[in-house]
Length: 235
Image (cartoon, rainbow, N blue to C red; front, side, top):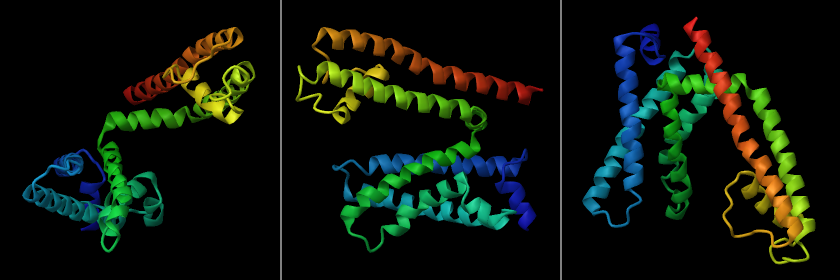
């Protein structure tokens, strides 16, 4: 029985496992839709009750799925603390924690239901390829993030010295300047904080050019890793 369940639950190329995977995916999407609908304050009591019933049914199925995955796992402890094991637990945890808790706390717990979105990753080969690509390029990504953090800090220091005297209300300290550095390096540019001095404007132009490169680099790293991943599978 255990091996039969394992054959169905842990994705294999067979009809039963495909039906199981599709059913769970559909249920995940339904639960996400009900979660979204529940936020509508104008819902009728009857509609809200129906959504609650759907939510309860979904959690029961997800709970059985979680228990079965632990049951069929060769290394149970490893599964429980794995990425998907934690995601599966977080997907059902808010429902059980909600009992006997102040309703105001529910607002924070309900946010954890968003983790059901990540359950879809298990059933999507394209997403699995993407995750594999990120893992294979993790050293380059970590290096990129480290360099980005250094650039953000130096950008904050630079704009602070250029703009502090002219705009002390916006650039009171390097900590306050970090917001400008982040939105400038990411090329978002909300326009709520901007330089007014000549030096600050020239400095901003340089940072914007660097920012364009920062946006492009991770795309190149991940796309290259993804291409290698697909090529390996093709072989």
